[in-house]
Figure 1 (cartoon, rainbow, N blue to C red):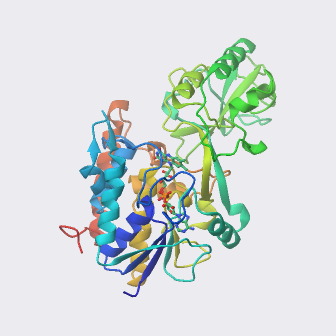
Figure 2: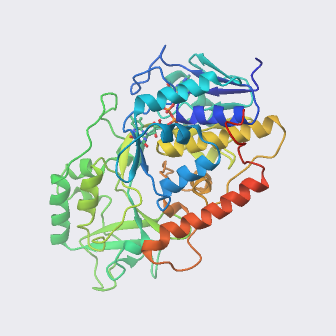
Figure 3: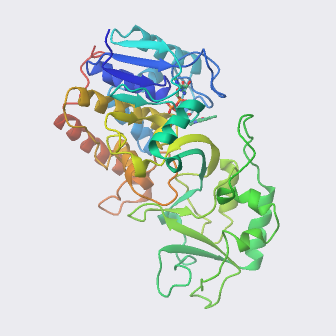
Length: 443
Ligand SMILES: Cc1cc2nc3c(=O)[nH]c(=O)nc-3n(C[C@H](O)[C@H](O)[C@H](O)COP(=O)(O)OP(=O)(O)OC[C@H]3O[C@@H](n4cnc5c(N)ncnc54)[C@H](O)[C@@H]3O)c2cc1C
């Protein structure tokens, strides 16, 4: 078989890409280095191994990740098909039997007449085009070095430091005030002022909170520029008040005075539906984050579409290097999928595999690439990957990445409204681009 498409990495994204391209009729070669060479987190030689949790998160389409799974299923996703077959009870979450899940995907890919799986590590970027890189957050060193050479060293990162984001409607606007440091009038930030007592209460809660255990291979070293908030706080009670919570240049209009400390919130999206807690990257557990951050004045009722984290992760500064078709701008025919492209999470990584596979196949067929509508979960992730932003960080899918709903919708009904709009737009887009997978497996 003469391969028309080479894919490096047989994880979630690589398998989706291979499946999508093979279903579109391409002969595909898929290189996976395991079991000959393991990553520090994988344990088997199976394709699509889930390295940590066995959950694909929320099942309902009224959550952003549930909606994303629904969209993937409509596009013929192998991950969702295997997840359906291997589902285990987990309340509202969609969890799978991890060995059966990876076993099934491995069998389906290996049995596909147009896919050849090769056990091989890519130690540099192969010349073949089209080529999809889907080597994940633990991309082997030699390949990562070559990718850094290709894109520029400052465009590839090895750790992510994610600060929580907050649903704009859950912030108490009678406490928050708009201002940019040293500037008159309403500014770009929302500021949450703290008195000395409030600051001390927050500090004590932070010091008492649980942090996530570090995996063996994760270095204890942090870059000074993105220290976890709790690590900084451990340096002394006042460190945060002179660091990310410094009040300089800010006057609280209610008191006409400078507060003792301030938490600054920066718009996460152009529509202002979500705000990022500036400088609040953290390794606290999710439960501890929700509890501790709600002690901050103005955040008592805060809802967090995304909580903070810091972990080993190889990813590109997507907005600087990727097109909306997931192709490197400066290297036509070279696609990047999965966690490496700048999304976060099993489902999101797999979803980017489908899009890369479809677009690589279209390149071979000389058809223009497809980009899903911005109102869909798939499109919202592409928006995240292609919107220029300072300090780009990977993101899970969340409704904060979607354009706001046209009508003001009660909170309880928002998820359904996002889903209705997305499903309608996705169907129209699929019909327009002839993307409906054939009945059966489409081989
Ligand atoms: C420790 C850890 C825990 C995580 N836990 C979760 C979680 O619980 N839930 C969640 O939603 N997300 C989690 N993630 C984030 C992410 O969703 C997963 O890593 C996900 O598997 C990413 O999918 P992927 O296809 O991009 O990469 P992977 O699934 O990692 O696939 C990449 C594949 O490429 C192979 N490879 C790497 N380099 C080469 C090379 N040079 N040549 C050939 N093959 C190569 C690897 O062996 C691997 O099979 C975690 C990430 C890490 C690092």
